[in-house]
Image (cartoon, rainbow, N blue to C red):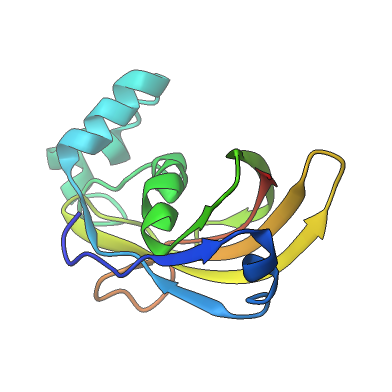
Length: 156
């Protein structure tokens, strides 16, 4: 990552609960390279030309190759880890998402970052469900590249 963000550290779930409703900050900027896009295509088998064929994509609807939407989504853990962490818990795991949208493409070579809003911390049998809204923006873009309502479980 470049332009490192300042990570907000919460010392336990009680402290995290006090921040519900707050925008927790932004990650640093990360470049989405063609190499990363190609590696994701290889890992998933999705070799659609808009992602992997720069010459054909140059004449396509986006004017360049673009990252897979699910590649952008897969970068959430590394990006959000720069925004906030909860210490004093045994683990945190991804539970899923309630809604995912990809309003704008991420052309190869673009830089993206994540903004995180803490929407809820709810007790559940395993620990606490943490709800965030994560907005991935592209540097210089006029619309978000991805908006996702994420759910995680934090186990004390």
